[in-house]
Amino acid sequence: MDPELIARKRAERAARKARNAGPQTAAKAAPGENIRLREWVPVRDAPEGQRLRIVSWNMLAQSLVRRELFPGSDCLKSKDRFPGLQEELVAYDWDIGCFQEVDCIEEHGAMLRDHGYNFIYECGYDNKRHGLLIAWRSKSSSLSFSDPIYRRVVHYDDARPLEIWEKTRAYRRETSLLRDEMTDLVCGQDASSSKEEILANKCVSRLTRNIALIVALPCQSGGGVIVATTHLFWHPRYEYERARQAAILVQEISAFRLDPSHSEIVDWPVVLAGDFNDQPHSPTYTFLTGNGAKYQSEIERDLEDSMVVHTSVDELNGMRTANFAKTILEPGDDDRALGRYRTPAPNELLSIPKLISMFDVGPCGKSGCLRSAYGYAHTLLSSDESGTYFRVSH
Image 1 (cartoon, rainbow, N blue to C red):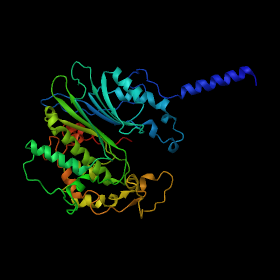
Image 2: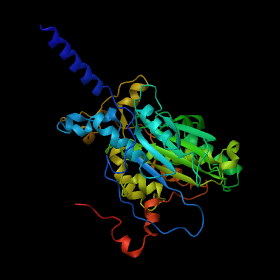
Image 3: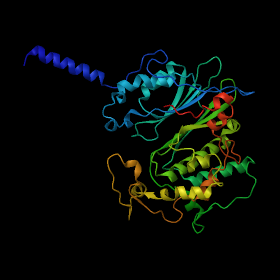
Image 4: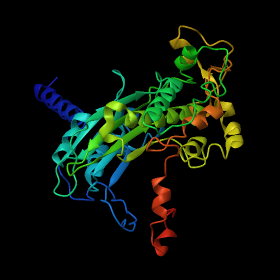
């Protein structure tokens, strides 16, 4: 073969390899150059207090992009996505950011630091290719934060919800936030089991490798805020597992705040933001907003089919799921079937009354619930804006 042709072919291959080598840190672009900037609906200023801008975004990790479903979409290639991702990441002048499905952390981290932010990143498992990131403004003349004074990573697969619930109640009793007598720990569990056996139960229906990240961020002007982010299990059929994970997180946030060794943060406000893979009519949202008892019968009906034990749980314990339900899947139908599972043993999973009780902890550790930022913000819109708050673009 002609030596010149060989050299040209080698040069072409080298150039192609360099182009596809992976994302590089994007150069600073003018706002809106690589993305269509989002339109924000303003709310009325609060009569007192300091304004804080918080964003939450699932970035869709490049390692999770399923290009086989969109074979003609070159925009899913990393070299095409990356400039837009990085511009979106820093385009909105936020103070605190909660991000899910984050990979390429070296490049994204460099971009954040260049724009005056610091961050914590956790993937939870050594072989997991994406994770959670909480970032905060570290350089500002108006509002900025120091590095977290406390942090906690929650591994849902390993969490023991009743043990966490018991710990939180102990903290509440110590701080006089819980004055009633100790209620029945079992609350729908098997009273013949020992307390140690009950507390050790993970009550898990499927292993998912999902995590949560909690940090205590001190404001440089005084005080601070507790920030938690999570990415709950994605599968639409596993509603019980999402509710379990959310219950664990609520209890972990309360325990984090009420821990006697964290006494300086007990009065700090709490922000929970993330990808819950759910909708406002779901049991998880109903639990989180304090309406579990009101809609208990509906929740029991909605969760009934998902209260199973997937084979992944048994395999972790060295067993094979017996009598699993056989499933026939078409390509792309993974989200329509429960897969291999069995009926749970008595008291193997959390009962609905127990789930309700686990969500009965407000942000302050007192009896109460979380408050939806979207729902609250709707009351702060002017009358001419409220009609377009839930507008659907065509």
